[in-house]
Length: 330
Ligand code: UDP
Image 1 (cartoon, rainbow, N blue to C red):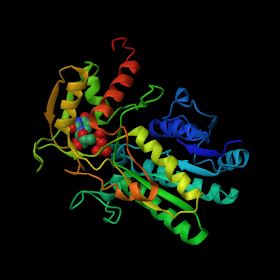
Image 2: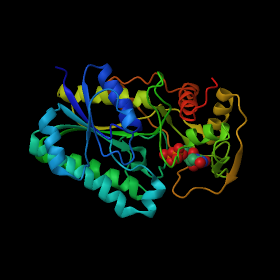
Image 3: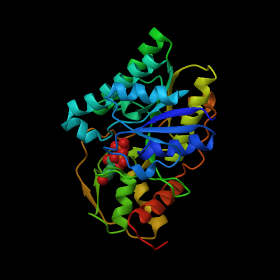
Image 4: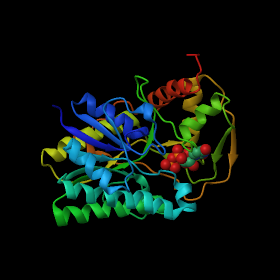
């Protein structure tokens, strides 16, 4: 019998890729998802247990039934702008959900968790690349909630011996190279899928949020990391914790920064389509530069991103995007 791993948010974008990676590594991924923003069809590598994080009894029942060796905790709302408009929704769902999960884990004796954190915990950094020791000064409710959960894990580790890894994702992008899962957000807010939709003339032209930043071409710089590389980091983090190696936070980025204009150009190159773009005002809360120093994950987890060059990210996202549009052209 393979070791089970509970994957909250296993029907979502990164969670479904993690389920595939876990199955490939010999684990049984058990997805726990309320399907409010996840998709039943993306649960393909193990069972789906429908349930809400807020439902502690259901969680404990599922934990008792599957006796997982660890939990990967993805289930959360992810839209920064929405968190600014609806802070209570974000604190209740993200922080309240994590609290409920940790309580159920303690109750059922599951002591290992890999948590989906974010580069948004760093806020607007003074310098890049960012190391894990840089100060956490998030600038919106989404990032503040994630910092709070990181602190909760640290406190629970000190008090109860919880083993945890807080994985700080930079810009997750791309799709499974085999085309078995990908990004399906509604509404979509992320740059690469929006640029690709603009290339397909689906929806509006891309609005570029500000070209007057203090960067070489005036647009924001981000560190794009392939979602399958992120998924692999979760497998490595689980193995590391289960082998008794230390808990902690890890930056997951490629270490390379690309501007919004460079991403648009990569999309034009890969798709062969012109991209209609209009330049709009800056989006509130967007720092000019976010780039990871991923050396801790490399050294401590042995993580080696393999698909995170920009063209591979865009190519895999494009294949998925065409499939989602029901577009038969290759
Ligand atoms: N962006 C943009 N237009 C869009 C969506 C995003 O210009 O319609 C820019 C955004 O300002 C940021 C970068 O693209 O500089 C990446 O944004 P995304 O929302 O994908 O990820 P974030 O960096 O916010 O996590």
